[in-house]
Length: 502
Image (cartoon, rainbow, N blue to C red; front, top):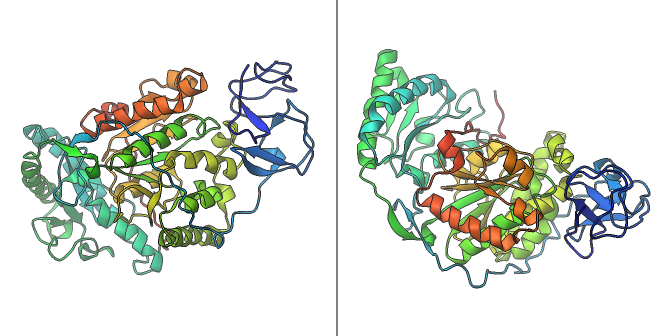
């Protein structure tokens, strides 16, 4: 039986598989003192109450009780430490660029013009101002896909950007800018080729002029259902506009482009103790390689970086970026406090069952997805970046909110890691799924694109899997379908809305 230790300073290691009481470990001179579930921590020495539990070379908190070497240490035995101070964050310029990146520095995408990111897919997106239009749009969408889309073979798909916002909300509340800019920026995702199409009801608070510029606000781009003569006219109007847009999109072709034209994101969900050992560090390697070759990559999840925020600050390129990091993380601290919660509310029962004792441990594993590159910019939820390189987008950690929020920030592909398993995906962009251990991959082989469990099994290095992922990202950006795309698997668009609902 094998234990995995990350840092020489660690006083705990991770059990590779379920371990029965009395089991001897291959790489340590003691036996398990009790049953230890897969992924959970084993004490490497005898410790007393009040001692630090150290993993990743960082304290996860203080022990609440004495333990002997070979003991199981779980979430009930560790006291959560105080959240790191934001005022003490320091710009240290510790980010480092990947040396000798892969020679492959192009992909085949849909060019959107000078200064704009390219699409990895060619999709017609039907936007909306309010959830009230959803039923009509869904009927029209089925008709478009069945009767119209087959005539335009160069278009990959037609999708509806249906979201639970737009009316019954405090539209002028300060935090309302977050969902409004998310809806606005969703319409301009590079995968949609600049073809705007928005369906409005006509009486909602999120009026068309809040999400479209004066030059965009015209009959070529908008339909108001309350101006239509009945249901059939509504559906027919949507179909007619869709066909005009499809005709233009059908003229687009993939061309070879530099990686400066590529913007992608990452998040993790259903994480376990292996996430920070296998899948997430592999994503970090792939992202370091992409940044070194000119691409823009985005990571997120505020509560899952909060306890490692000092590491992020140390990699920011300048003090201005550190200050934006303070601002966004501080806003989220206040947001949680108003709801009577803090970052400790993040870990799920599944996270804990997978060996993650608390948010500190989860955060340290989550941050591994960002690699080691300098952080060039910090953006708020739903904002779009102005700079290239590694971007931190301050989104919620919830999978079904983080994904659409990154989509609004312009990503055209997402890499998603999981150790417990989740079928999450998005329709508007390809999502590549990575399993943290091989048992999960073998259980869901039709859902995962890469198995990072080879790292746990000693069959591959983090760099090996990272390079494999790098090539798969570029292949997928160039048109290869992800497993989720082949299955037609996708989640709803749940945009981040911290503003009041009236």
